[in-house]
Length: 450
Image (cartoon, rainbow, N blue to C red; front, side):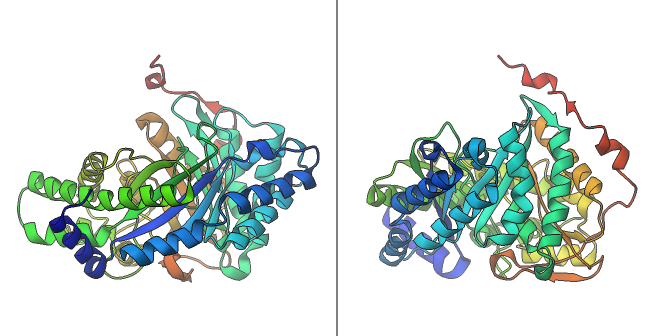
């Protein structure tokens, strides 16, 4: 699949430019785990995950060692848990069963404590959503998501209002960890069913019983490639990014197929997402600055990000039999050293980040805001992001952390891949009356494509 020169180039990318497989994620359907009681359902969920994914971590480590390719995370995603909650009155029990199963097999995270409520919520959806704060505060590796909007359905503003309350309560219940629980929760518009990245991964109902999805990341590789074309026109820049994305995705395809074969689970997709880390040399912001920006967040940032995102997708789609997930450029503030610097200097704020989400892969990601931010303001931020996703037929999301007891200018430390971030200001004008309306913002005209 790779010729000698490609292999040597890939080795250099790994050793010098922080290229890695960010995650091997096994998606597992739990629809056949629904039983007559909540205890029986939870037990079947535990048994199914520990049986299906018992070798996931070992296989990942074996591939990492044999091929010399860093595989940072091994993860599991499950059927949106609300679908299992018809007879579960306390979904926190299910979250704890997921946490125990994930720890038993040794994965980093398990995602899918989720509800899809873009057009409306069932009683089971509402039970799960109300349980999210407690579930995230009482588990370690469970991640949660709620899809509140889609281009086909419009925006469920009742769910948007509830999400603001969920974020506030989760922050308070994890106050001793600076609201860390919020880092494990994301609210989506147009969520995809095959996303391998946390915190938003879940195993969609259109997926098979089990599947292997791989997420590849390499911001440092792209930046290094652009250093070779300083001052050249943007069409040259786009071509360099496409060629680099092609090489990176080929590596992901190879790892995905090898994991699929060893685990006897079908290969799903390769997600080529430029997911940064707080380490120097692994920053999406620094790619944008390599294009000629003095600091990410200034005028021109959105155009640079649009070029980057599009070129990544074009290069990736030619390199794999199946590219999916979110594929593009992520802009999580706390996880990107360049974004952190720009936010700390005031060049990058929420309004500019919102504009950037119009052209990137996800949305307002890992942003620390003042702890006294009202739930209605958090909901209004989500409504804006959902509108961008719905109108533009793309995935958008928010992962906000209102840090209890802290305000603008202070810092929060999450550690590891989640990094650190300055607390950025939000608009202080009230959104209470706007969010209190509830109901549904109708689907746009471009939803009528049948």
